Image (cartoon, rainbow, N blue to C red; front, side, top):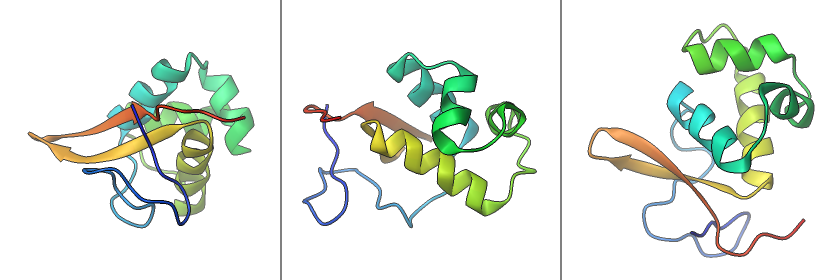
Length: 99
């Protein structure tokens, strides 16, 4: 598993931050990979638990800055968002995580 952030090289299939919107399924899968509760994700993204619930339920009432904050929190924790692979955008954990 690998990810590249900032100006480092991006592995094949990885999406740049500006490309594609975070999907409900990606959010759920990423949170599960990290072993986080919805509250832990909300705390790290500096948003409410309801924002996380709505996102994971596919109810995109959240402002784009909330979606970016959630995605940023997941990426900072080591999640890499992948290009659409057979109809489903994916996620994975980068190989070497640093905290």
